Amino acid sequence: MTTQISIDAAKRAMRTDMDRVRSALSAARCETGAGMLKETGLSFAAPSSRAIISGYAAIGTELNLWPLLEMLAASGHPIALPVTVGKGAPLIFRTWKPETPLKTGAFCVPVPDENSPELEPEILLVPLLAFDKKGFRLGYGAGFYDRTLARLRAHGSVTAIGIAFDEQQVEAVPHDAYDEALDWMLTPSGPIKIER
Image 1 (tube, rainbow, N blue to C red):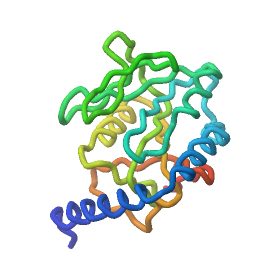
Image 2 (image 1 turned 120 degrees about the vertical axis):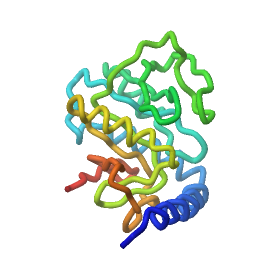
Image 3 (image 1 turned 30 degrees about the vertical axis):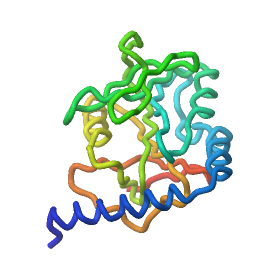
């Protein structure tokens, strides 16, 4: 029987490996990947014309969402960015527009300030280190997206779309009972529907 200690150790080892994989991608690959996300858009998830979409401000070697988010905002979608409000708490989401000034939030993540109204997203674009074909994702270990997805799903319908380079797919992500699976993956090669 797999113990909690072995799951935690497997997650730590995979984080190290996948951080190395993502960091090895060329600048050209990263720039092309961001453009391909914009070209694909989110029509595969069939959002309503005014669906509220939460993105993220990429940090480090995460796949850059700005071109996609700017396009979605220009097409009339209200856009939000996640904000960490405390250890063990779900994320909240604050309104973002291309002209919105950002400040440095927790973990050095750029976030809108307190003057930006809160929104409840219908589509959540989720950063990650690794993903598998069952929709499990490896995050950074704090559990913010798992808690947030659990809360959003308990209160209504939300579509969770993982954002990653194709190179971040693995055979199986070690996961716990509390890990929330994604509904879709979006990579530069296109969308992947998660079948559960």
